[in-house]
Length: 401
Image 1 (spheres, rainbow, N blue to C red):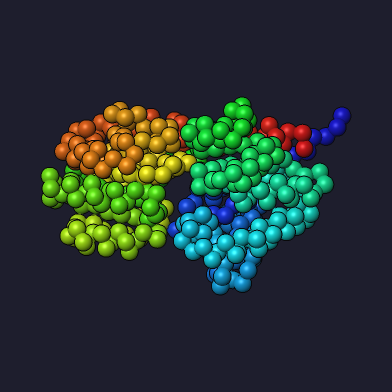
Image 2: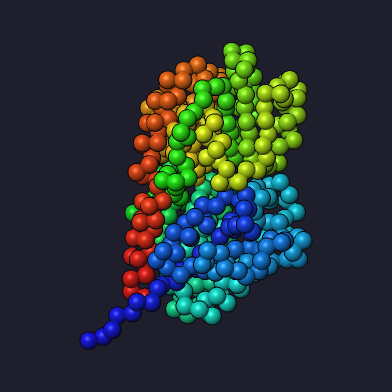
């Protein structure tokens, strides 16, 4: 009788966002997913290099390779807001794109040649998904490829050529996952069959990390967490906050995050005479966010651009915060208006201000919404649930290898 092998399967994860060093303030969701995948698989992460980061290292048992794509002092295409945001802010960085993609392709080929890889998991269609497809075309007996879109690649890369590239990557991938139902609907417009698209959000640790505070003092504290870019609706928020102050002069607004709008927003505060009411915290470590949520009365998400998944909303709901968010497809995956949070029409400053006033005026409503919000997502988005869905997806593709 033939012996069965107990050897763990190996997954190559390609991403443009991964911790560069301890206590890095980059979004940690790819790392969190990889750490949990490692319970069952050997994980090798391929990510772009950044000045000061190790070229090769082990992080929590995962092997991490960071590829150089230009002189180290110029390696600024990824991280610090993401590739698309960096290209918009500094158009000269388009000159780095060809070298980035070629270097990632060569690094991926070397990994596939030097070790057994049973599956490639590419985060973002472009560039990782595209490079993964090209690498498979150049390889003998290539492993299956799963492409996960997080939203910026789907909504931010438009035009006839980009749509053709996205469609080709999706058609060539063995499986596709997106982080919200709104993204699945958008992907169908590219001609991708609904049955091929798996909706699997990134998870949240609702057991130990994003939990309700033991006590929450009633006040008039409003919190925004996210990148300081135009699409996040911060100019709209500041305009609405001025209206809030006329009703609640003791209210305060805290903004956690960095980005190209930083100085512009501070200047708007100064022009409006509300500088003493608005605190800019800058970048905040992910592990410190539960503390911020725990002392906040209202978490606001005023985005005016399409989002892949409202991670900030999910984390805030886990801490039983009352949330107010613009009406986006991704928001509808998380909030039922009036039951688990409040929703206002995208870009409507009057409705945004009214929603903030309504929540600040009613501690009882905030408490009811916060508790209902946590109940509504705890069983759907906890990492223990999400990782099981990834295990199921990956095993369906690797079963015959």
